[in-house]
Length: 304
Image (cartoon, rainbow, N blue to C red; front, side, top):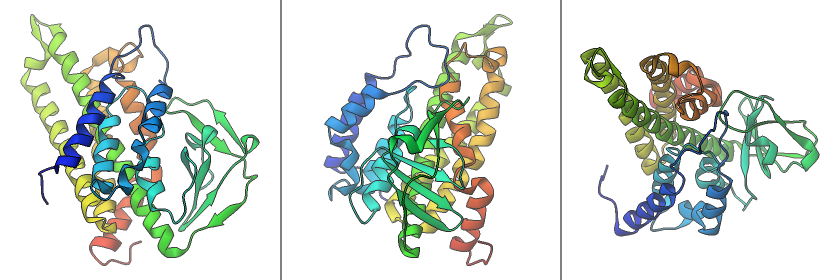
């Protein structure tokens, strides 16, 4: 695996960094669950960033790095599916994208122009009318919605469905990676400022050890998803998604513990990342689904 970015990749990631800096600040007096990134989505559209994966000198790996970096932001927009899944469908489909898995509510469904409908091993594509979707209240830090089923669904072939599922896993892992790193950075800032017993919390060895473990786990998620995007291998994608969901479960628990009582309220913005992670933990079959896929794809097992 080559860790050196090309000049084109470096230029693109620098442009993403510059764009992201305009959306890193938290709005004052915000105590909600979902911080919509409407302006972020507009600037990404205007700059044609959603087409990164289709540019030969950039490709899916660069798009994955962009998804991971933009997931650091406190605001949220439909980015991962449009950047990583949409380019691998046979025809050009309108965005935003959303996923409906086994009839459950999904992220960005209420505003989606293209729905990926997952029912077991089958994946279909639908273009819902405005009255076929509706927003639902949720504690997750994503805008959630449900599909009423009043739209024609085109079922993908087995090979196309497998390819879409692969990129869904890569998109999932990339987004979790960015969210984990942002949540860790936010918690580190709190531990550096908050003082107890005459010293900052970050100087206590027990907290430092737990934070180091969280950082190592999050780093593993990032490298696994970058490898999956580079190799475009189904097994690598399943492994990245499994490690992302497995690691996130522990990291989210530890980070909220480190914030003490503030971690149980909306006083601190940590929930803007961790509650999005919680929504992602059950997607694509959750850890059990990813583990079965890893067994089948990486170890030639009949488990999945």
